[in-house]
Image: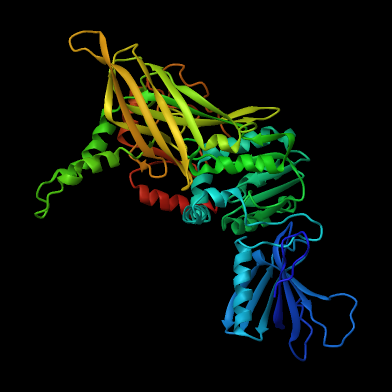
Length: 580
């Protein structure tokens, strides 16, 4: 049933079916009627792909004994515009919406496919579904523009169950909305692209992990010659719909449903744009796909937006957080829980709670030393460099305190030829959906002002698209009754970045009281109807801080709303976002 060519992946070809038209409707135009056939027409079907996406090409099968010079094309149906339903053991119903016909009225085409055998119906239907998910080997089209292969690095290093959950998550509009409503994130990307329009004008752009397609649209707004939006999740279909609704930008954007590790593009890119950052910059391991896209698609000396990332680290002291985590294990100290002694699991539970990195927004005054940073240059880094990241730690405590762990955040650079822009997730800056992350030690350290703190942050990638964190922090112990230090005290932690504790009772963000923050978020362009704070709140303004401690404010559709009812506010934001 399959036909193959010599060098390209085999085409999926199917025979033994007949097509009969049901109706053709033209919306807001003159009705067009299919020719009336005396009987269903025998056709063959071939699954293909071009720059517009995956499609099925139906061709007439001539009667036995007929002499024909070439195969007569019957119709071509793009899968992202088609709905396919099994209507019986040997019958399929197809509905095709020609919504991308921008030069004329929109057509709705419906027809049936009759198979000789139920097995043929099942095989063709399964092939359609596999083709939608880019899980089969597709034919290289005559122009040689693109192909898809199932063998790639992503599938070799990532568990299929993790990938399935990952792509399911990002295939939902509500999660895309959560990221788009992060106006620090989206506004910085928009400013970086538009202010550096000279980098995009007349250029070929590849959007790596395009999601909703918003960055592709930004690139088109900046004058890109053509944008290839590569998206592996089901969000690719929504991206096509969103982009098609933004004419004429849609004429310069092609959505490709597939992984960057496997798709082929018709031309090289002058610039890559992507949002590959996770918590601690590297979570979800999409940075590796960004680097693979660089190696596969970017021309020599091409640009990347962003082009560099930095992980910032500093020790912190937070008695409240430490007590909150430790107290969770009190449940397991019960010796008679319905007659059951729970204490055998107490120590295991205690360590389990401390194995979760804490994701929240914290007051930067909790930091007790100047931060250090680790650089990752996306233009030169190798994919293998991200498999294991080893960062030595060396700080000098600014105060006498108990050290409860290591706080981390990141920033990325858009190194445009006109304007350089940083997107930061630093504490004290406007909060993003990444927040910050803290690794909490189960055994705190005691330090004096000016005392060195050393250690190691060791990240090891694992197949669940995240990292195991090994943290070691050391300081000389304090001799009671004196200011002298004695033997070395060391505390270690092993944490799973995949399983964080999302602590959403965070305090309001405050500005740094000194010049410890190297990059301040500049005033960002906001979508119409959104109020952006002009200045971060000052830690010196006690009246403001007391008010903020009593109620947290959020920005939504031009209104400053106290977050008394988070569920009601979230529902309000979600209902109004897509109509803004």
